[in-house]
Image (cartoon, rainbow, N blue to C red; front, side, top):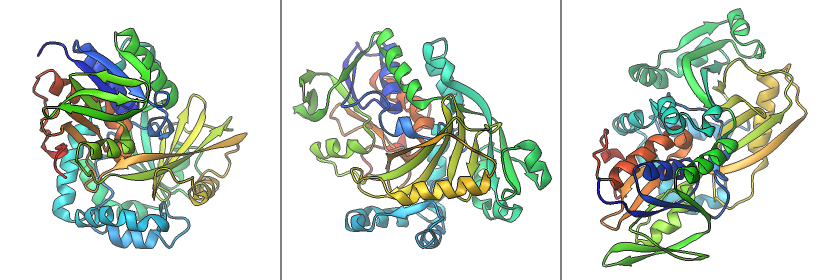
Length: 413
């Protein structure tokens, strides 16, 4: 590798934390900074699933027809803040242009190497550390109303099978034997064995920050406001606490990466895919494994502090207040598919996933600036974070990454 560098990592979600840890392990002088505590955004509020099987983008062929149906159905898992439509329109146009067989296949091929070994990547990141206790091995069960609903999802399952994820399909009365928590509304399960999930995403992020500092990195609570380029290369990050000199910087600030990119002259088409969760305290029962509710498009994940029901998509401004409709839909679906479940309280949360119009993140150097992108993972940030961090550490240590980074070219827009 090159001589050790002074590197600033901006953003303390999973991608920033993993980048900072792997860069520190490679011998660099690393400062991780965030305006909030570690994992305060989408890395905290996600479903906790290590979604190795999540290789199919949202914008598959036929998505426009499906989206139009969803937008007129109160029980559908998609919403659009119509007042934000003028700002979203250019992104939606690019998103729709990618919803064809050729581009969908390209996006799937790009997602496969990022996510399909996620459990192993998380284990490598935390093995033998205080954060390891939050990593659980578990099956994952897709829950469908009927076998016909499962069969209608054939495009997605064909892609999953081709990537090595073949489900065990259970129907009828056997569904209740496999998962007693489910009610009669669910008549078909598609189970993927030996997957994984995080037992407490917030605690996991906090322990990763502690791990970083124990291994020699530094964490600084500060807001990155700009960067200084000298002869075209970064020399410092400007924060609300003063300038931080550096040899390189990594931008891993999720949807908040966009304004930093604009300061470098790049208008990255990044929007907020707003996700919602209800975290149920003291549930009367726990599922035997995490569930993915096919109709509502949200996960039901047993965690150390309760049962988390998280997912859905709302396109809108990242700073807009939460909407009521997604919470109400999740509540109705819980009552429908888990009729015997009771709980003490339901904590509401909304966060913003950073989404590109081709469903692939930006990973790599911005031009020759010494600024590296590590954002745009939409709903697979937790899943792909450790792999992304390793790729960033390889690039900044002059090591050849073991996958082709062309699909994630940080300059492609």
